[in-house]
Image 1 (cartoon, rainbow, N blue to C red):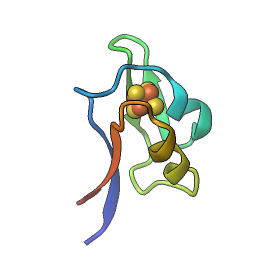
Image 2: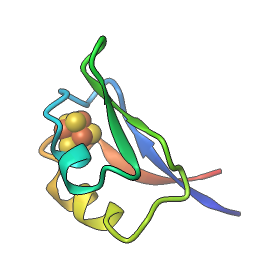
Image 3: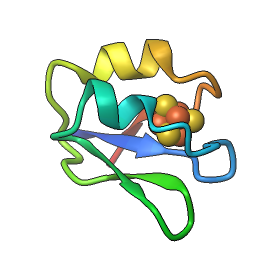
Length: 63
Ligand code: SF4
């Protein structure tokens, strides 16, 4: 099974850190102030975003 990047929108506070660290994968939705995943398969910087997210809102999910 493939793993995909997941953002828990309930937990996300819209701080923008993941987009700063990893803009190829995360993009802020300015309207709702939450991060969206634009590249579910991820890139190398996803692990750093997971470790840095203050709300622990980012994880890998089984597809
Ligand atoms: S770093 Fe975490 S809390 Fe901040 S925008 Fe990204 S997912 Fe949301």
